[in-house]
Image 1 (cartoon, rainbow, N blue to C red):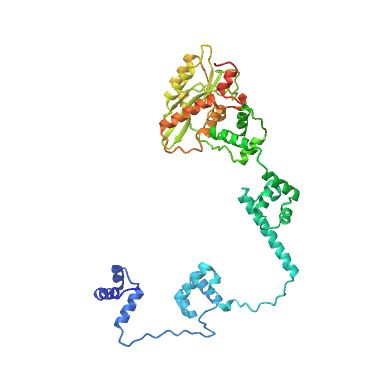
Image 2 (cartoon, rainbow, N blue to C red):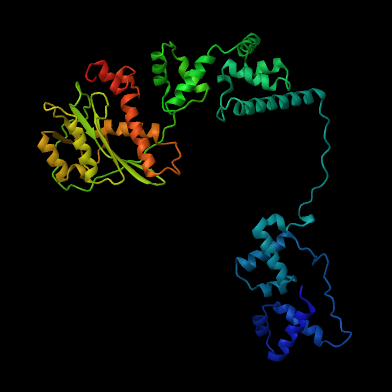
Length: 459
């Protein structure tokens, strides 16, 4: 472990200071016992040889003591607190052995302290030969269990079912797919009996799967519509788009989209809050969650929402018309200050005629309680309405607009590398698309602008 040079250097230093501790402290080696041995070997007379310890291996004092003695010794030394040296001298085994027993007991329990004689096994009892009939029964059970395992595995891998699926709840088409995957491993009759599938149903499904897909063209059209709408349209609005094209289908759209894994991803949003306390007197909640309007510019809703991207934060302040969800005006900014909502309100007021004075409902955010907002409302004769404190359902129609907007154009997209200016342009284009092209089921599968044109409200 140590070279001759290291031993020589340690012995020279010891001759100078005559201290074991100082040698170890200065050199960092060897152990105290090693240095004692080196000194003893150097200073012992020539021809001296240490006497070998004679092990007392008698029936009364075996070389390998019993498990009972080891456990009693550990109990006395480390539970009752008796002196290890005194116990060692009493039982005739070294202190190192006692500590070794304790270490093994802590790591692996009493089993680690057992000797061969502590657990005599004896002779094995004579067995009886099993009958061939029982062997065949066991083989059949093993094959049946292996069949269940293979069916479950293919159900998870091929059909993408959840673990713990009920085999009896599978459709005949799904059962036929599993049979095709494993038909070279088991007999067909064994499969059909296990899956409770009749032979006629199996061959019917085989013929159906081999026949051409009569919905192939419809699948392609549905996929294109799903992609062109930025993967934001569910089966109801896809159905509406197909109906506008003159394609008449029913519940098949939902099934086809499920088979093609065309799913709209929805993410929970974090709401931006502009509440800064009761800085001015609050006004009454006039709208009282009645978001229905019989005419445009009769009830308006507004709020502020936040878009956080790697490049920074962007804030949107729109007006939502309760009549059809149209956005008469909006403003986008990188700071949620008073000018954001005030300029937005100026733009919205500019769209009104002299006879139109809509009710504007807001939350209790500070922007709607500052002098700039209040003076604009009073000067144009617009009526204010406010939600209760911390009650988002009081402005749920506006919150719903924010949720749809973010689910369709913001969430589930990677905005890394997109600058603030580019994001504002994308957001602005999405709002124009929302007004002019995005269809709503409640509007007869028309966009807000198309709906107003159908009523003759706009050119």
